[in-house]
Length: 575
Image (cartoon, rainbow, N blue to C red):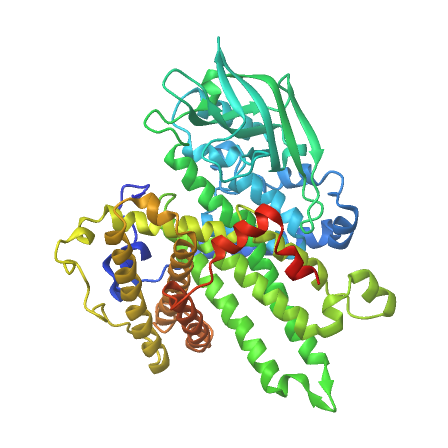
C-alpha cells in the first residue's frame, strides 16, 4: 500500500516513513494535528447534545439485561442524523469530520456500548459508509438514494469458516442480469435491523475467482436473517447470521476491482476507519469512564483513616490510567485529524489494537482498584445500597473489543506483514554489502519542546526505531521468499506489536511537544503523562525486543503436534 492524499494536497507525515528510514524525523511531527476552532466548536456542541440525548433516552442497564434496544430508537437516531454523521448534508447527513464522528460515537458508547456500536457500524462499516469507496455510476447512485431516504445498514464479511481465509465461502455466480448469492454470513452488526446490506463474496467467473462486495436490499427474495447472535459483552447489539439462497443481485450492485482479485483498495481504507469507529470509540469510552469511576472511588474510600489516594500503589494506578488514556487519545488524534481517507492508513491499522488493549488494561486495573465492588453486578450493588458503577458490564464489553474486527494477535500479524512488505519493496534492503541504507543510530532530528525526561525518551525511541529496521532488514535479506518469513508467525506478530508501541510513544511525545507551544491552549500535564507512558512503553518494548531473539525456545511445534495427534500429554496435565 502507498499513502496518497485524497484531496490533491501532499500526503501528511506518516510513521511508516520513520520505520522505513530507521529513525524518527521529529521535524515531521512538530505540527501535531489539532482541530480548527470551528470544527472543535461543532464537535463540542454535538457531543454535548448527544450526551443529553442518550442519558435521557437509554437505560443502559436495561439494554444489557434485556439484550434489546428500546422501541423506536432507530427512528430517533435517524431523525437526529446519527446514522449519517459523516455523510454530505446534500444527502441529509451532518457532514462531520472523521475525528468529530469518532467523538460522537465515543459519547454514545460512554452511556451504552451496544447503542453506540449501532451508530458506529452504520457510519463506519455499513453499506452507507462505503460511499467514499464507490466510483461514479449506478452503484453509487443506488447507495446514495438509499442514504437520502434514510437507511440502516451493515456489512457482512465473516463466514462460518472464519474471517482470515483468502476468499469468502459466500459465492456470487454470474447469471443473466447479475449474480446469484449462496451461503451464509456470521457476526453481521445491524444485520437483524438493516434494510440495506453489503457482503463480501467470492465472485466466480472465467478469469478466475475474485472477491467482490455485493449491495442489496434485505427485502430481496432468498435473503433471510438467521440466528440472532448474543455476545458476552455488547449485550443488545443487533447481530445475526445472514442466509443467502439464490439471492439475485443486479450486476451494477456488485463492486469488483478489475485490477485485483481482492476488494478494491478504497474499501479497505473505509474498513480501517470503520474499525476505529466500532471498536476504538467504545474502547475510548470505557477507558474514560473507568478513569472517572476510579477518581470517584478513591475520593470516597480510606483505610484506617488514611485517604486511599495517599497510598503509593494507588497513586501509581491512577497515573498509569491517566497515561494510558492520554496515549490512546494521542494515537486517535494523529490518525484521524488532518488526514484523508487514504492518509496515515498504517497508523489507523495500529490504532485499533492500541485502543482496545489500552481499554482492557484500564478496566482490568479499575476492577482491581474497586476490589469487591468491581466484580459485582449493578443489580447486586443496588440491592445492598452500594454505588452502582457498571464495572462488570464494562469488563465484558472491553474484552469483546479485542476480538471484534479480528482478534488482536492476528492484527499484529497483519501489521507485521505490512511492515516487512515495505522492507521487501525497498531496494535499499538488498544491498550486496549489507550496509547500504543503514541509518546512523540517533540520526533523526531532535525533538524540540519536550522536558528533559521526555527528551531522553525521544532519543531512546529513536534508537529503537533504528533497531527495529536493522532487525527486520536482516530478516528480509535472510528470507528472499516472503512466505518463508511470514510462516514465522511469532516473529511477525512481535514486529507488528513493536511497531504499534513505537508509534504510540512517538504520538504521545509529539502531542506533548505541541502542547507546549503558544498555538494551543491546553491544560498542564502533557509532559508528565507522556513521561509516564513512555517510561512504561520502554519496559514493554524491551521485553518485546528480547523475545525477538531468544537464546533458546521450547519446541512448541513438537509439543503441540504430539498433544493434538494422540492426547498423550493429557496424562501429564490431568493428574
